[in-house]
Every structure is written in C-alpha cells, then in structure tokens.
Amino acid sequence: MADRRVTNRVMFWRIIRRLFGANPGRLFVMLLALGAGAAVTAALLNLQVDAKRRLTTEFRAFGANVVIGPRADFGSAENFQTLDEAQTAGALDALDRRSVSAVSYLYLVGTLHASALDKTLPVVIAGRRTLPLATEKVSRDTRAGALSQQISCDVGFKVAQQASLRPGDHIVISHQGREATCRVALISPTGGGEDSQVAVNLEAAQQLAGMSGRISLVQLSVAGKRDEIETAVHTLGLRLPDSEVHPIRQFTEGEAKIYNRISGLLTATVAIVLLLTGLCVMAAMTNVAMERKMDVSLMKAIGGSMRRVLRLFLAEAALLGLAGGVIGAAAGIFLSIGLGKAVFGVAARPRLIVYPVAVALTVIVAIFSAFPLRRLASIRPASVFRGEA
Image (cartoon, rainbow, N blue to C red; front, side):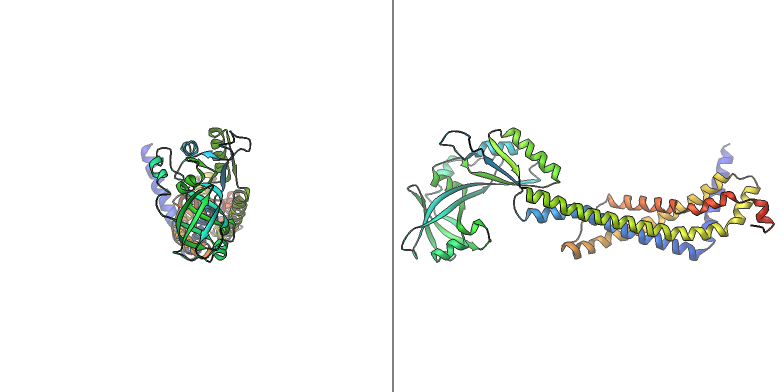
C-alpha cells in the first residue's frame, strides 16, 4: 500500500511537470496575469489598511475629538463649572494612554497691560498643560511659586494687534487683583478663538484664579475607530459621573465617513481587478481544455477516474496561482509604498497581513478560473480516438 502511494505521488508530480511544460508561452501569460492581479490586489489592500492610520493621524492634527467638561448643576458655587484635575487624571488611567493624549485647560476673563497701551485690555487667559497620569501630580510648592517667577505666554493674533505686541515684549496679566508678568514667546494666527486669548501654563492660570488643582475642561485625542472612541467615552463617563464626557461628532463621524468611502472604493477596485484576472486566466484555461482532450481520454481509457483527472488540473491551477501570488504580492507591497507617498504624501507602511491575504485571493481566483476544465468530464475516449470529438 505504501509503495502504491509513493508511485502515485511520483506520477502526480511527473504529470504536473508535463502540464507546465506543454506550452511555455501560455504558461507565461497566465503567470503574468495572476502576478499582475496579485500585485495590484496587494498594493490596494495595503493602502486600505494603512489609510486608517493615515486618516487618524491627519484628523488628530485638527485637534481633540473628545471633551470632558463640568455639569452645569455640579457642586457648590466655589467649584461651579470646574473639574478636579487629579480626579480627571485618575480616570484617564483606565484608558490606553499610548493611544490617548489629553490637555487640560483653565479659562479666565482678565486684563492685559502693555507698555504700548495707555489702558488695560480685557482678554481671555487660557491656562493649559498636558494632563499627567495620576502618579505624575505637580507639587503644590511648584504651583505656589509659579507667579513669583517670570513666565512665558503665547499671545493671540488679535490681541497682539490691539496691544501692538511683538515676540519678546513683556506684558502684565491680571485677574481679581492677582497679576503676573509674562514674556511674549509666540504670536501666530489660528483663525479661531485662540486669536483672542493669552495662553500661559496651567499652574500660572490656577494661581491667577486662586483655584489650585481646578480646571475648566479636558480635550482628548483618542486614536481608533468610531466604536473605540465611543467605548472610551462610555468608560470615562462611568468613572466621572459628575462630569460631561462627549465626543466631537464632526471629527468622529467625518473620519468614519471618509474612511468608509475610501475603503469601499479600494475594495470595489480589488474585486474588479480579481474579476479581470480571473477572466484572463479562464480564457487560457479554455484553450487548455481543448488541447488536452487526448491526454484526458488516455487517462480515462486506462482506468483513471474523472475526479482524479480534474484534481490534476486543479492542482496545476492552484500552483499557478501560488506562484503568481507569491511574486506579484511581494511586488504589490513595494508598489503600495510609492502609491501611499503619491496619495497621502507619506510612504505607506507595509502590513504583513496583506501578503498572505493577497496570495490566498490569487490562488482562489486561479482555482475558480479552471472552471472550463469541467468540460473534460464529458469526454468519451472512444470518440476522441476515432477523431469524432
């Protein structure tokens, strides 16, 4: 029994070699079609996977997509419309901080005085700081000394115009009798509300307001899909029951819509490429079926079952698909790097999961393209040998 299996295996590979070597020109055409299809498939799939990362990065550049703020009816008058910074930082520990960045803000309405002004100018003072983990609290000694030293600040474009300020100038900002001297470090137009603000570090704003450890709101940039962002919002809502946690719908929904459209377009293109590849290989397989009538008739005449005969041709198609897929998918991965740079301005990152998927799809297309070989099942050896078929 073992000898018979060895003999069958040797005969199987001998027949496969003869099938591949029967017509080198047609073999090259089929390998070229399968390789080209695999290359385009791998390139588009890699772009589709990388598009999510690129879109997330681009949308994060526009700002936060989740905001944590106080409830309107929360707390006493002393803590009205503010949050406890330490409690908020502790709630963020429940999230994966590698995919979340948080900035805390404290907003005050104060006044600005500069040497070029003969009167004070009302401004919005915005204290900001990257929110630390709960284990990275800023000491009270540091906060207490914030106003004793000269601080730097970023002045909005409109404020700078009204006060005739330039980088390097010194201004005095005050709120409810407390004041601080700061040096203008940056003036840049943003086109938003920041143009009417004076931004300082959070500790200085807390000292001006007399609210140590309090913040107005937290802006989060949460990376991930829409459902992942919703999960983060739900988790924070449970850990901060006295706060309002809500996503910025324009960012989350806009990102999801754009990605769905890009993903749908690339998926449809991959399907069309695979269909065209299959039709090309199917045309070649039709010629194979016509040319191998004599071989099939001989196999059936000496006792070979049609199932085993078709299995030989399907094995040939699968090997063709495997060879074309392995070569074409590798070329497609490198092709996607250039396409990513042309589309997104940054080279696409190769994704290893794309390679086996592209190879598998190519093999499946090759096998289904062997459908014309089913015509060989109806061949009658006697008719072929007499020249009647």
